[in-house]
Every structure is written in structure tokens, then in C-alpha cells.
Length: 555
Image (tube, rainbow, N blue to C red; front, side, top):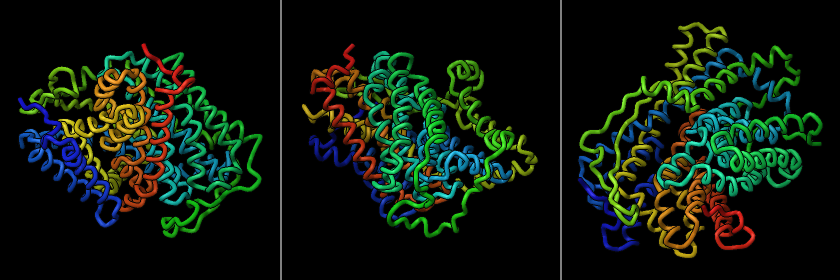
């Protein structure tokens, strides 16, 4: 057995700096633009092993096994999702159905700002609720690039839009994960998050359009943005507080899409914004072919159904795949649980992170049928057959997709290896304890801890599992509501989703802009940290300032 060490130097500042080295190195290498992202990820993984072994005293055999576990976990399920959603997109392009989809979206509106609201925000929120784990960014990024958006606009804006729904993603998985480590009722946690995020669900649509078109461009379509935001934020609050946390995104996104489409039947902006590039200097637009206007001829009902059919199939299958009854039916039969020898239950998480020594599990659960990516693969094959593609053509497109995604899959696996190693070595807990030492400002910095957790792990669920118990312990010591700070971890975490390396890789892959991850990171970083700080300030108000304190659930 090995007990985690959180302050190897006996000095909090030095230990925190040491713990931050791998992730800082990763972000600096990516942001520099001088190192290919998969090389940056592998370099950071090597450094993470050196830090864990030589600075945090983790036995080398444990560190190496943790890294290998992370590599495999990176492909299943995250890489598996990315590979198969890009496969689905490739099939629709090959069959000519994507051109019909573009006409369908263009039939609602030709204005690029309103297309962003419909696709990146509302449609993306639906896929976040149905499956999460990179799915919405992959799908919306691919659709936007197909509609003619510049690569930077398609990838960066998809990342920004995929924030407000994240806390309830994959049918409430982050909330369930948070409940599992804190022992707090998931209905209470879901309700508390529902008293934090709706204000940002209203802000984010304005933010996305502003980032794309500037202040004037945003101001000219404010009625549509307001309809989109309100029709998502209000159901988000009502469903999370009065129904359950599992169907929040599904319900809110469908209502938002419906309200926006109905509103656009009676209102359109005076001047259409047809530019597919970001305002200002968008170097990615220079590589774009000349923009082609979408055929304005409305689709017949039959053509519209044909255009949407592949995505309808995907939605139906993902909804089935995300339900508890489906997982309960297939997992006992089609699951292989592999406890990593000489790693599983060989590491103790200790105080002050947990009140009593707790063994760290290291099990690779290969639920190969219920993986979201497996559902996507099935949907893609069914859609390919229905679209008239031969089995040989479907197979050849899959091989082409594997080649397209190869470097991205390597990168994602390396990212998850870093996250798994930092968790099992206690390096992440060292960073968390540094945030926990901020006293009266803890509501603000505790929220940023959730942001950091998602930036490190790429998942709000993982961040909640990582820091949820620490949030509970620290809030109790400071006299704050554990429900408030547990929810703050999840709400703050959603803003870290746009800068985590694996999400950026998913976005660059979906938009066929691999090699430009540094440009995407530089674009989204300022939006991520600003929005995370705004969430932190709102949590401070809920912690200390009336009437916001009346929103806090205490038991």
C-alpha cells in the first residue's frame, strides 16, 4: 500500500508549483503553436510521471500502470465517441444528405448568428443531455463547418456554447457522480445547480453571438437571443428543481429549439449576417474556399425528413443508450471489469482530502455495448444503409475516418492518462488543497477549483468525483452549505469545458482543422476564465449576500 502525499516539500507553495507543472507545461506547449498537440500531450504525460515518481514519491510501477489505465480509458469511451460521430458525419457528406441538412437550416434562417443559436447552443445542448463526453462539440462543430463557418468560428464557438448544459450532461451523470462522493441527495445537488446556471444559460447565447459578430452584430439580433436564452434557462430551473436532474438538458434544449424556430417564423433581422468568419482577424477564414450561398428554396416535407433522418436515428439511439434501464439490461451481460493488478486498491487517499484513509479503485470497466460511441456506431451504420450506401462503401469510410482521427485519438488518450495519473498520485488533490486555503474567499476559489478540475480531466463528472468530497469537507469547516459548494464545483466546472485539451482536440478534429489547437485555445481561454470568474462571483453572492442567500439549499 502507498499513501498519497500532498505536501512533499513541507511547503505549500512549492508543492503546489510542483503539482501544477504537468498541466501548465501542456497548456503552454499547446498555446505556443510550435509543438504538435499530440507531441505536447505525450511530453506532458512524461513530465507528469516524473513529478509523481520523483517529487510526490509515487512508486514507479504504480505511476506507469496508472498511465496505461488512463490511455485505455481515453480511447474508451471518449475517443470511441469522437471516432464514431465523425464517421456519421462523413457518411452523411458522402451520401449527399449533408447538403440537404444545410438547406434545412438555411430554410429556418440564412443569418449566421441565428444559425449559431440554433446549432451550437440549442442543438448542442440536446446532444449534451443525451450523451455528453465530447459529443455536442463534435456534432455541432462538424455541422457548422459544413454550413461554411470558418474553422476557428466553428470550433471555438461550439466550445463556448457547450457550457451551460454541461452540469446535466449525459442524463445527469455529473450530478450523480457528485452525489456518489459527497453522500448528498442528487435531487438537492441538481436543484442547487439549477439555482446557479440558469443566469448563465441566459448570458451564454448573448456571449456566443458577441464573440462571433461583435457588439453591434449581437445587438441587432437581441430578440432572438433573448428568446433562445429564456426558453432554455426557465425550463432548466423548473425541471431541475421540480422534476429531476436527469432530463434537464433534453427538456430545456427541445423547448429552446422549438421556441427559436417558431419565433423566426414571425421575426427576422433587418440585415442578414452572411459572413461565416469571426469578426476581426480570423486567419482561419483565409484558407476557406469561396463562400457558397445556401439554396434558399424550401425543402419539401419529404426532403426535410430525408435530410434529418440520419440525425433523428442518432438522437433516438442515444436517448435509448443513455437510459438507466438500457444500461441495467446490457451491462451485466456485456461488461468486462478488469481490476488493474498491483494498482487496484493499492493507493490510499488520506486526510485532509478525506476524513479516513480510502482505497483508490483502479478498474477498467469495458461496457462495450453501452458505450455512447457504440450507440453512435450503430446509428451510423443504420443511417448509412438507409441512405443507400453499400457495406463496402461504409467500411471504406470507416477506414478513412480512422486515418483522419488518428492523431486526435492519440492525444485524447494521453490527456486521460495525465488525468488518471494526477488523480491516483494525489497531485490534483494538492492543487485542490491550495484553493481550499483561501478562507472567506473560498466560495469564489472553490468555484474555480471546479473549473480547474474540468480543465485537467476534460469532464465535469470527473471534476465532481475528484473534488466533490474536498468541497464538502472544506465548506463544513468554513460554515458554508456543502450543497452550495458541491453544486459550485459543477457549475464552475462547466466553464472549464471549453479549454480542456481533449475538447479542443475534438473540436479541431470535427472541423478538420487538426494542427491548429493552439489557435483555438488562445481564442477560447479568455472567454473561459472570464465566465468562470463570473460564476465564482455569483457563488460568493449566494454564500454571503441577501437575498441571494435565500436561494441556497442547506439540507
